[in-house]
Length: 390
Image 1 (cartoon, rainbow, N blue to C red):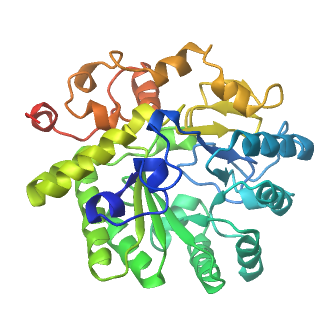
Image 2 (tube, one colour):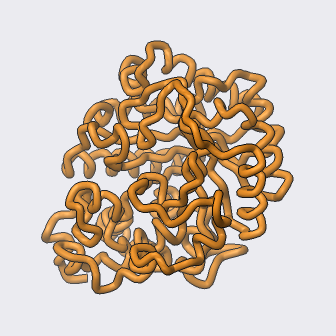
C-alpha cells in the first residue's frame, strides 16, 4: 500500500510504524514484519461482482473451515502476533458464525478489519461491528448509481451500499471505501471523490486491478488513464489535507505509485521528495509485500502469498498452523520472493526505482506472462522516467 496522505501531505497516519518504520512498534526492517493476513472466511456471496478475484456466487462451497478449525486459526494468528487480520470473502457477513468468529478473535487480542460489499450492514449490524472493536469497516464501491450496480451484478446494490456507509458513520464506526480502478469506472472517479467528501468517509483504498478470478475478464485502465487517475487522487488528498479535514488515502497493489508520487514531488517540493524517498526505501514496495508483509488464508484453508495468487499454495491450515507454513521457506517460490535481487527481468531489472518498488506486483507478471520475473504489465512509468539520472 502507498499512503498518499502520509507521503504527499506529510501527515502522520495510523500504520506508519508498519509501512514506513516510524513510531512505536516499528520493525527494524520492513522485511522483518509479520504479515497482515487476509482471511477469506467464506466464498459464498449475495452478489456477483464482475471483478471478483475469488469468483464467488450465491451458493454453498463444500470444504470451508469448521468452527473448531476457525478457532485454531485465530489462536495461531494471535500467538504469532500478526499486526492485523482482514476478514473477507465472498461476503464475510454471510458466514453463519461471523460475529462469533469476530468476537473470539477480538478476545484473543487480534486487530480486525473487514472487507464487505455493505449490502448486509443495517444499523444493528453496524452497531455490533462497532461494539466488537473493528478497526475499520472497508466497504466496496465501484462507481456511482448504475455503474456500481453493473459492477455488483444486482440492481439496487448502490443504494444499500450508501446506506451501509451512513449506518457505520451514525454509530461512530470508522469506515473506508474500497474501489478497484478499471475501464468500467475510471470516468466516475471525480464523482466518487465527491461522494467520499460528501459522506465524510474516513479512509479510502484505490486498488489497481489484478487479473484473478472474474477480474481476468475485466478491461484494465491504460497506463495513461492510470497516471491521470493517480494525479486526481493525489490532488484531492492534498485538498482535503489543506482544508483541515484530511482522510486516510491509500493506493493498493501497485508499488510503482510510490515512484510516481516521488517524481511529482521532485518537481513541486524537492525537500519533501528526499524525505519520501527515504520512507519508500524503508518500505521496499513489492519486495516486502506478497509473501512477507501480507499473506492469505482462503476458504479451504490454503495459504497463499496474497489473496490474488491462488495458483501458488504454500500449505493448508487444516494440516499445519499458518505460522509454521509462513516460516517454512522450503517452497522455492516463496524463498525467491523474499530474496528477489538479481532475478527481475526486462524494464524492472534496469529501473532506478527497483529499490522502492520491488518490481511491482509479481502475481500480475505470472498472470499475463507466465513468468514470475517478467515486468509487471501494469507498470505505467515511462522509459525516460525509469532510466533518468537519480
